[in-house]
Image (cartoon, rainbow, N blue to C red; front, side, top):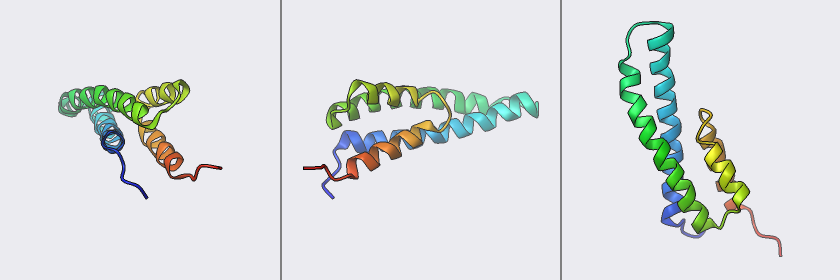
Length: 104
């Protein structure tokens, strides 16, 4: 398999990190709103997730430029930043698409 361009590698790492930050934020929200034991998790993971969200948007745009994604794929990638863990689904989908042989 050919070397993966830096923008695509960055996109992959950021998509995974963004999903992990979602997990941390959801756990923090559970402890803040359901268990009512404190808001430390939200104070920590809220800003982390916010930063990774912005980085994910930038990574999608950078990867789209390198991989020459169409507007629909870009819109889907950006929309996948909103629901929890869909950045992982989108990253896997784009990885599989990259590995598929091109029909002659």
